Amino acid sequence: MTAEIANPGDFAVALCRSLGAPVTQSNVQFIIAWAHVEGGNWNNAAHFNPLNTTLDLPGATSMNSVGVKAYTSWDQGIAATAATLRNGRYDDIVAALQGGDASVAAASSQGLRTWSGGGYGTVIEAIPGAGPAARQAIAAAGAGTTLVSSLMSAPASATGLDPAELTDLARILEMRADASAGLVQQLADALGAAAWAGPSADAFRADATDLAGVMNRDADGLRLAAADLRKLADDLQQELGVLRAVEDKVRAWFAANPPGMRPVPAPWAESDLPPTGDPRWRDVQRAFATIGVL
Image (cartoon, helix red, strand yellow):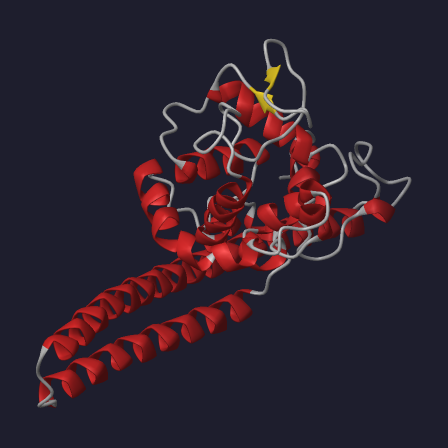
């Protein structure tokens, strides 16, 4: 299940997948920061247990007086961590991860305070520093899943989104990407025109070059997200068109075949037809296909 886990980033990707959560930058960064503060596996004897859970499983042993477990494998450790998160005491953390933005939504959650026995006070501080490791882990896993692409994996009509709103959001992301690229160019122009020289100047220029690289990568990510949103908007528009066509045919059948005059029984109660655009029209479509209507 977990394949090779060599670092906290790999662990974060595996835990997201075990929880059915998207492998987003925000999620992976949050879990890396959390594991850093907990110190499991790489910094203590809680083998295969970066978050120091105490769930007992066959073969696991306690490594301290609190009952933190050392597990027998990464499969067991991931399963134990996911099971603990799902035990009802950490629903806010699970919801934040499944929402794709745990660095914002879970970093100060009640569940995190419960897990830590009162609160770390340092997870939020550790999140920014986990950014590079999170990007590396996502790239190594070939995941690259974003909140946008997790929406794209859902049935188009089930998202409750408006295609026009998605297109507007894509346009906003493209504008943000252009603005970021513009700032990088302004910085490059300013540094090129500056007469400042010496070791301090060289160090500053090196830092500025690193920052420009980060900003360019972020801009590329925004453009990719915008492209995903536009595709999702197109898919959603197409699906809604199909659902409306199904609805029109079904309602036309009911109008042409009133009660008492129907050649065959209706395979779906007219009173229970879903509202326009509801994904259940696909179920209605399958039902009416049994009588040759669709």
